[in-house]
Image (cartoon, rainbow, N blue to C red):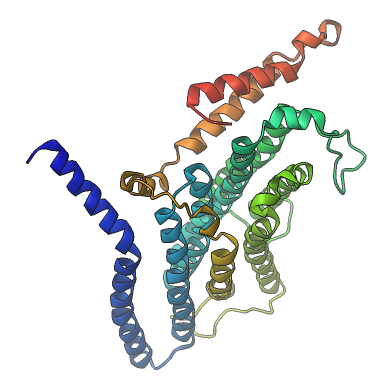
Length: 397
């Protein structure tokens, strides 16, 4: 069999898999469902419907309904992978729903390991915000000369509550500062998560304790400041370029991402306050019962599982594949290799390295007051460093 025949067979197999992948996944899913539901019902009967088992079952039903909706959206994007740089970001954002749903469900069943599962879920949250920012940046650079466009636009003023601060810089510096605000959260969130994880394992986290020496309280404050600043930078970027970004309707997409973060954080904080106020108490069963903290975590995980079903529908509509449907048939190899791109984090590594390089060069080259000249300004150094790193990494931005 010659090379051309093998190539044709490979292309045929790839096209066959692409056209039928949705049906294959649906069959596999239905088979798993047929096994999971009887096992769940049997567990309910065997345990005489204990309260926590009923909670597991209810949450599991919503998880089972969430997964096919999200899978359908991801498969459709991969089948119509006409704009990989944009769709790669969108798929990672869509995956936020099953990640939250799956880890929350496991957190209810494996209550002793919920600290690790929560850590992975929370780190993915910062990763989603990063991908949303890069989705906007990628779209702008594919359709506009962004630096020139921003140079001719009026300087973007600060938004509430920073109106009295100087306006944002223009040109590429505006993009650098916007991305930098998001990267602060991308880097700080895993760090604070690891710190909190170590403190929790050592028994010195001070969880649910609002006091000066509580590591939990300080990580909570740092995470909130970093998250709010990242979201603020996203809003400023949108505000400056909202007319150019209108083609991808970023506002409903942003609201979907923000809603997931908002509900998961504030309802968790509310439940922690209920524990602190002794409204949620320890179970009377000291052997198989739940502590107040475990009860709050279980309720939080159940609520997330239920909410993610609604968000899966919203994400399926808002992050639709339809704008990317091309009349030209895509080559099958592109579809297959796109699967591996979803789990390739090289772009994150390169972007973080670029931002760190920009920051380091900016600090090293900052002139003294007596030496300040336009040629030595940190802005020029930032732009040169940004450009050099982008060329080295092969980035389009």
